[in-house]
Length: 368
Ligand SMILES: Cc1cc2nc3c(=O)[nH]c(=O)nc-3n(C[C@H](O)[C@H](O)[C@H](O)COP(=O)(O)O)c2cc1C
Image (cartoon, rainbow, N blue to C red; front, top):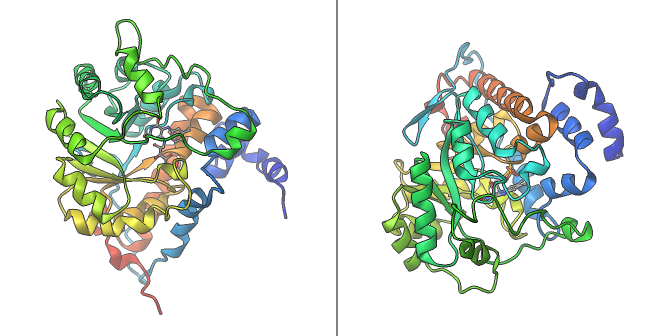
């Protein structure tokens, strides 16, 4: 079997070109750019990383039925999501708490690349740049991600700050317990600057909120509390981490504007099912009109087609964008988005889909 090092050497031919030929080239360049510790941080899941792997491999179970002579020469990849026109159905996922280790420009570079690609960005509260700075760098910064934790007033204050900065949606997440990430534990890797992320401190948000964010002994939140905060929010909220019909129903009852189907790329808890296997059920529960964004396992353009056919309106790109960022900053993320969009375009064309609206479960080969 080829070792990872051999594989990287084999892929050096891609990495020598600024215009990476494929995602493999981006990955090889990112591997060369990052220390092993940061590489592990980027890729790690939790526990045995069963969920992290399954998120990706589960896409192999969705095979297409490709009709002869059905191809479309110039499919339209554009779509509307959250009131915005996207050049293809994708947003960059909120990845923070260390993204400036991939490239010092972090979310600034991601936002600029998203803007150049005609898509939108979701910006994490844990980013290495303040939310205002990211928004000023790019009009693509549409959604601000923050966590249900600590005092409700702190959460609502932060939402107002995001609104004042120009964000149009809030993505709320919930992660009350520390994650069992063995690669990081073995590397003795702790996030540099974890005590002072850019969004807290003088003139920013109350540092008490940061303490609450990092305090895993705080009392847990409930759906009643979430509903109160979503009700008081100055912006429409998407609830992230939905992987069941029960939670989809609860989030909508709590006032969520949209659902974000995700298991955080297997970085929160291991042995959850592959996220893509939960998507159709969530769509069935939510009905046709609720905006749904999906992530966890999107690695190529055909994965975007699969996720849309199973009920997503758009996908979010986490590790793929992080790899682009590590490979070559803004240019690297731009190339990732270009490759994904082009492969998505090709997939649509071969499947005979003139537009994203034609992506339905009928594209899949019926079990024989
Ligand atoms: C390095 C890294 C940092 C992340 N940080 C956050 C975060 O701050 N907030 C959040 O909601 N999700 C975070 N995520 C999860 C991503 O938003 C997304 O759900 C996940 O990457 C999807 O899985 P995939 O990258 O395997 O497709 C992070 C992911 C990575 C890889």
